[in-house]
Image (tube, rainbow, N blue to C red; front, side, top):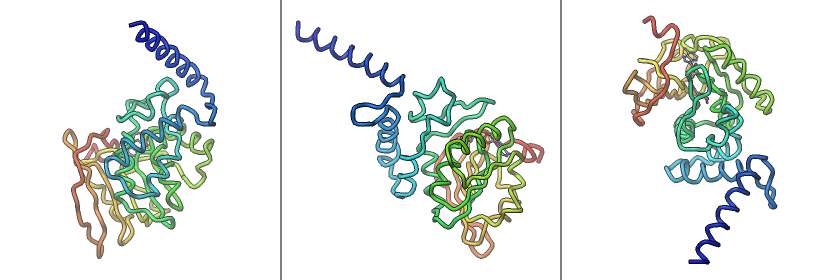
Length: 243
Ligand code: SAH
């Protein structure tokens, strides 16, 4: 009984202590901070455990400090297994979905990638560690600006951010070896199909209330389609809404 109380107190004290240490963001004795631990656990429990095998994707997910891409008050939840709000009614995707979409487009270090829906810039940062250049378009000016500043500050120098409607793509920089769309259109915008290189892959959550993560590969100028999984993304805005 007595030992039980002592143990409970000990547990309480150490929990409080670790929270205090964690909040101050100081590193432990071994030079490891709370987010290093949280990131490793995220990759182990949510990414590798669910079957992601591409070591470039795994290493990128281990490296990018996701807590830097969410609002300060949600920092502690950054490594959790769900999407989080990033302002303007938009969300940063669940870590596993970021990893899955990245793995499915089969990136190589020489590739140039287009992302539609910059949001926080997190997906762009992951892509930038694996590929040569990342072009990313965001329709909401405040998000485009904060993501561009954040990516620059964190040293992701091969990412180019543009504010605009991703429906139109980025013709000046096309063709792209891969295109990742992180908002949901009812169908793939035609300009993006045109801007995908031969042999290139495009991944997109297609639909409105019920969405399916869909992978397209361009073979002899035509798209081959594979359904991946049911998902839930914010809708694509802009030109596509008027069609
Ligand atoms: N990839 C982001 C999360 C995307 S949330 C991240 O890693 O944080 C989807 C984003 O798509 C939102 O920021 C939304 O504003 C943006 N979006 C919606 N419609 C768009 C369009 N037509 N063109 C570009 N961005 C768009």
